[in-house]
Length: 300
Image 1 (cartoon, rainbow, N blue to C red):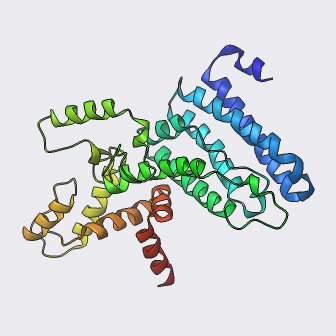
Image 2 (cartoon, rainbow, N blue to C red; image 1 turned 180 degrees about the vertical axis):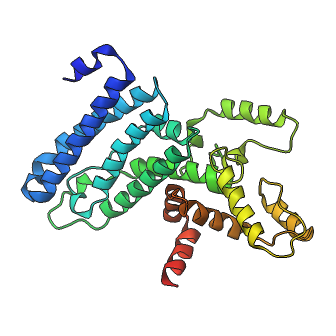
Image 3 (cartoon, helix red, strand yellow; image 1 turned 120 degrees about the vertical axis):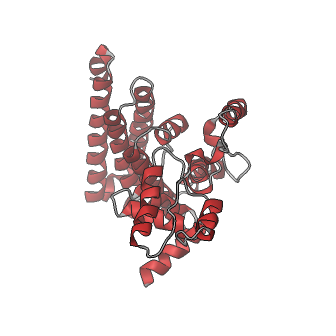
C-alpha cells in the first residue's frame, strides 16, 4: 500500500500515509489500554511503526514546509506524545526521539502555531521520560530503560530551544547537553559576522528570543503595550524590542516600571491567554525557577 501511495512522489501522498500511520498508532494504543494482555506483543510493532514514520516525516519536510504540511507532521507527534506520556503505557510504548533535523526544522519555521505545538510536544516527551524513569515495577526487565546518552540527546533539544527563546543564547554549545541547534560552528560564525555587518547593535544569539524572534516579538511587545495602556502618568512608551537595559532606561525616562523577570513571565502568560500555550509549557517544564513560580501561582 505504501509503495502505491508514494508512486506519484507528491507531498500529498506522503501526508496521507503519515495520517494513516497516526490513526493506526492510535488504534493500537487503544487496544493495549483496553486489553493489557496485548502489552507483551505491542512493543516491537509500535516501535517499528514510529521509526518508520520518523523517516517518512523527515522526507516530507525536505520537499514541503507549508503550514499544512508541518501541521500534519505535528499531529502525528502529538499522538505519540500523548501515548508515551500515558502512565499505563510506559512499559509498553518505548520513547523514540524524533529525528534531530526534524526538530530544528520545525523550530525555525516562521509559524507561531508550529513553534507553539512543537514546544508543547517536547514538554510531553519530557514528562514521558520522567514517568518512564521512575522506579520500575517488580518483574520489569532493567534493560528496558534508557541510556544516559539517549536522554541527554533529547535534553539537548530542550536546552537549545530554551537558549533561543528564554536565554537569548541561540546556537550556544557550552551549556550542558546543548547541541547548538545542529549548526556547524563555521556557519554560526559566518551568520554572526553577517549580523554584525548590518551596522546595528544586534548580535546573532538574541535574535530568536522573546523580544527579537520574528515569530514571538509581536506578542511580547503587545504585552508591554497592554501594560502601558493600563498605566497612569507614564511619560514615554517603550520603542521595542525589550531588553534588560531598555527596561532600566525606560524607568529612568519616566516610562513603565517593569522588571526583566516580570516582562518574560508576563509574556508567557500573555501568550497563554491568546492560545499560544506550548512555549510556556516547555519553559515551565524545563526551567527550575519557572517551575517554582508556576507552583506558587497554582497555590495562590
